[in-house]
Every structure is written in C-alpha cells, then in structure tokens.
Image (cartoon, rainbow, N blue to C red; front, side, top):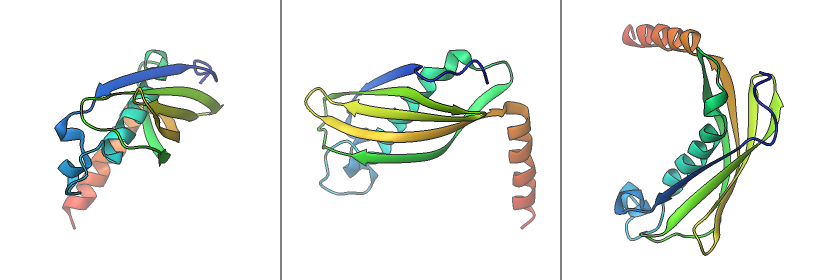
Length: 135
C-alpha cells in the first residue's frame, strides 16, 4: 500500500439538475440537492484522489461515510467536493472531504475505503449470489 500517502487530494464537481433533487427521491417539495447525490459526489472525489495509484488487479470499496449536510443547494448551482487522504492503515484509507456550492460549505465528511483484490472480491460476490439464489 506504499502507493498511498496522506495528503493525496481529489476533486469532483457537478451542476445540480432536477434529477439530483431530494424531491426526485421521494421528498415532495424539497427542490434542493439530495443528501444521496451529495454523498455520491463526495465519494467520487475520494476515488479521484487515488484512482491513478491503484495497482493492476486492485480496486477500492467504500466501508463508511459520516457526512454532515450543512446547507441546501438549489438547482443550477455547481457543487465541488474536495477529498484529502488523511490516514493510511494498511488497506484502510480514511478521507476528509468537504463540498462547497460557491456560496456555502454544503458538506463535510469522513469516508473510509479499503483496497481489495478485484478478482477475490468478485469471486466472493459470485459465491454470495449463488447462495442467495438457492434460498
């Protein structure tokens, strides 16, 4: 895991569309950026921080997200999430993430990801799928 060091950063941005609103996810009248969409953007910024450093056959999986959604963001605003790799403990990667919409800080979060072997991970998924189909 020596390819990962504290201080790596990644950034992702998106313009809030109608399909990103809380109202599109079953919260009538809440025409602001949904927490689900915001969380996805935060996760994408973490992936951007490490994507180029993964070795052949490796991938990361999300394990935990602790997010404070601090302010509403209306449609048309551009939200930018910035992630910093703050801790590396073996395969465990801990990110500190924030997001801003040009007016307010809209989120702060801690996101934990693990580096795993792609083939082993999907073999486990396949085995689980076979067990589930027998139920």
